[in-house]
Structures are given as C-alpha cells and as structure tokens.
Image 1: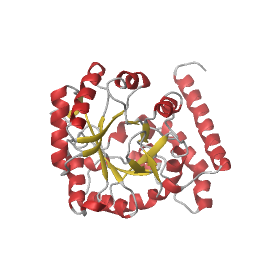
Image 2: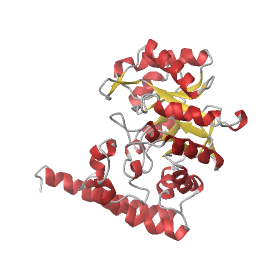
Image 3: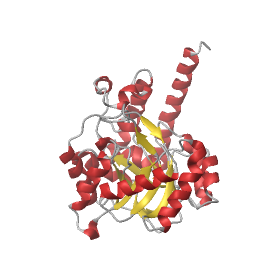
Length: 334
C-alpha cells in the first residue's frame, strides 16, 4: 500500500488507517453498539497483515476501552511489526456516559500518561486535541502537548475538528503537524477552507468517517438503519433517517456500477474519492472485525479516472439539489 508523508513531519502513513472508534463499545453517548473484543483485536491484526501501518484511537472511545484493545493487539506483535499509533485527548466521560470537553494543562498531561499505560507504549506517534472544547483553552492544551513532546512522550502533535482560525491561533506556539476532520462524499465542508490552508502550511490531513459512518459502504439499507441499536449513536443521526437516508442511499446506487466495473467493493470507492485530493494523507476506516478491513483496504491504491470522478460528482450534485429542495420545503419556502 502506498504511503504519504504527514505534513512536514518524518511520519509516513499508509493511505488507509485503522479506526477504532466503534470498538469502544456502546456504553457511552457516542458508541456504536456492543463489540466483540476478540473480533476487534483480530481485525486490527488483519489490517496490519494487509499492509496498514497506523492505528487511530482516542481516550474517550468507550472511556479507554478502545485504547485497551489496541494495547492488547500491540502486545501480540513483534516490536518491528508494530504500527504507528495516533490517539487524542480533551474529552472526558461523565457519570451519565455523556462527554465533556476539558483542555486544562493538568488534564492533558494526565490523559497522556493514562493513554501510554493503556496502549503499552513508551511514546505516542501522533497526539491530537480531539475537539476545540472549550475554545478558550486550546492554547493551554497545545502548550501542554508541546511540553509532552519535548519530554519524549509524544513524537508529533496535531488536532482534530478545528477550524482554520483555531489552527492559526496554535501555529505560533508550535507548528501543527496534522488536522483530522470529517470528510466524505456526504460531508465536503473542508474542501473550501481547510484543505487549501493545510496545503499552504504543510499540515497533513487525516480524514475520519470517509465512508459516512457506513452509509457509503454499499452494505447499508433502510432496514438496517431502522434496526440500529439505541446504543449506536447513528440511530440518532439525521443522515440515517428519512428523508436524508433515502438521498444518501441513492448516491450509493448511482456510483455502485463504478465499483462493479472495476471488480472492487463499493466500500473502496469513497476511500479512493477522498484520497484523490493531494492534501489528504490518509483515510481512517473503522475496523470491528477482519472482514471489514479486507473489504476496504484496497481503496488506498485505487486511482479514480476523470470519467469515474465525473459520475460521482453528478450523483453528489443531484443529492445536493434534492437536499436543498427538502430544506426549503421544511421551512415553507415552496
């Protein structure tokens, strides 16, 4: 699998990264339902066998549960075969399983130490502020991360879900290595400001939810959406309920022939699509079991033709037009 340099750093990431949000389980407000731990570890191992060289996780995923499983997977691997590890700080689990932002220096340092222990590593390859929440504390958190880097606890520091203006506030303190935003066919907001800014400033881009949390895999359906567990946060996401759900599934059906004609799974297409942008270093794919990464990993080496990109663009423009019409109707404009 091809690799791309992460911004101005010395880290080289494969174009596909192993995502572990979902393996944190369903006992928190942003969970994905119950998870089989053995399947999760096996899925991570399979991804590494297939050539993926990095794993994305976060302390908040299941209140440490995801990092624990990543740590278990790492212990079974010889040191030379271990992948790069990216994790995040700044989200704290509350007693009622909801999430609160905390970016004070002491909290960031404490979270880092706890992550190191759960993961069983001496240094985290990429440490990121998960969300800029509260906004007024991002400089304090960033300064704490600089200290952790200087102490050898972290190799590189980046952010997730930050605006361009917030990136500009952090840059004078220490260069931002990377940005991790949501980016997919169904969420293109970063194309206007974030991607150009990151390109101009040598900031790597790692996109999460490139398959729209499963909507773009080709395996999703209205029936599956209706059957989502209350423990799965997608059951409360408007994209997974009509009328948005129907429009999203129409996109999949419109682009499905491209995958079939190429002899690939539909799930690889949205990955190849986000990776068409030179600013994007890697795309994170969720791995809850081995078969998932087996279906998606090939997207990291699929270079779409101009004709294929035109088909995708046509489907997305049609979706955008229908969505705009629905929004106007709901507001009484037509």
